Image 1: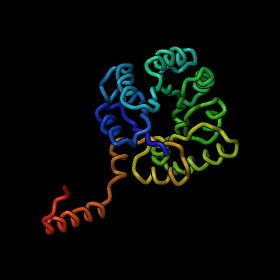
Image 2: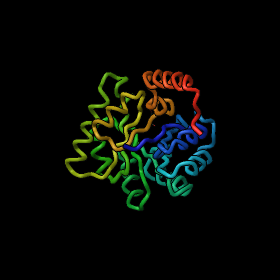
Image 3: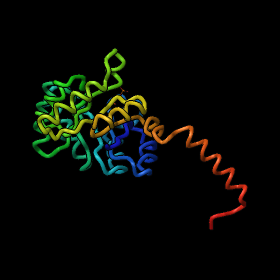
Length: 217
Ligand code: G3P
């Protein structure tokens, strides 16, 4: 499973990229606003930090506007992935862009039927939002299971990119279902490495090693 980080914070991205475990980055207009940076500048900078896809979202609501913005965004770097909303205009733009070889991430997916349409439109990634689904009383992981089943039934190549991830259990469940990618905030990704028994064991080993008086040299 690929790990993308869901942020426009360049320092956090560089920190995670240094682990060698980061496969890509996703941003959205809210994350760009939070960064306080210029959209095109920050996307270009992120594309230089990671080799994998960097999702950059257009804000136009109509197909012509989306394609105009996408054309500016995709020229920033070869690893830009244009992020489009799951609307009929977004799907039209998706079909056009992917047929030209541009990577597309279709976002704001909340139903399996929407995911089916995105796959038929040739999307590179579909982004179902699990956390926001949970927020309104539905199990977001049911959606991931349904999409996995449908995509496997028809051998769709569209990758399931689990978004709106809030905690490590979401990532565990996504991996068990066989999602292709998860995107999560930096803190959630870093928490995957943590376990209190690891910390306790490490303290014990360090204390016992100190008693030996040895050094490894
Ligand atoms: O980038 C889309 C998604 O990951 C947003 O997450 O936490 O704002 O629902 P959240």
